[in-house]
Amino acid sequence: MARSDRSTPRTITRAEIVDAAVRVIDRDGPRPSMDDIARAAGITKPRLYRQFADKADLYTEIGNQMATSVAAAAGNDLTLMLQPPRVALRRVLTGYADSILQHPNVFRFLGQAHVTQNADGSVLQFDLGRAAADRFAGQAREVAESVPIDATGIDYLARAVVGVVVAITDLWLGEADSERRGGTAEFIEQATEFVWGLIDGFLRRQGISADPDTPIFTSLAAVNQARQPTG
Image 1 (tube, helix red, strand yellow):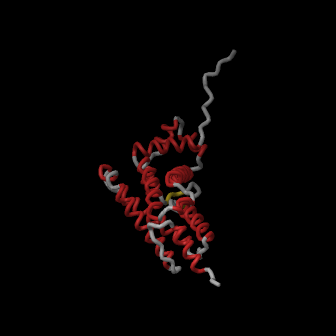
Image 2 (tube, one colour):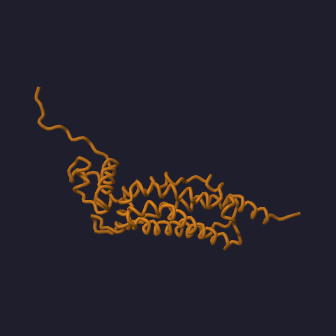
Image 3 (tube, one colour):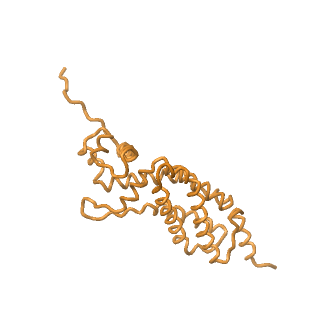
């Protein structure tokens, strides 16, 4: 029987390459080389580019994986609305912070790679907060419609909330490693108050005064009941 001198290369998936890229960024910092990523995945760079059209395609997939990880850690169910806002926000932001601390270099990398050039010459804009803002807006709209209150401006509120969290995450990750973990509690507290301030401002523009230590559904239900005609 004839024996082949070459073994057939194992097919590697996009997800495996993304995992390799995350390992490289965790190890080497937020400026990875495609050569290092290919080596970590156990393939050549040409084989990497058979799975990803260009660097921007790979970056986008890394961003998608991290966004999914953060969403899972933070929690995205409406049962959070049954808790007092401060309690709910601390819970969400604690999960978010824990997820960030697992891969701080990856989030630095995504923040620094906000603009890159596609192979066709077009510019890819990285909007790290868009998916999170859209998810938040959708959940907030469901809550507003169930009470109901006017949902006008919720998209702006969602972008503002995510923008604040992303901005202060950058500040938090900019601290020295020895200080960052000690500053996690402060980051969560600061983020909680800033986010609640935005939500409170949105509600007050509609004449709603909500207590951050009372479940938001309770506050909104009381407002809705007060608005019902009597008699």
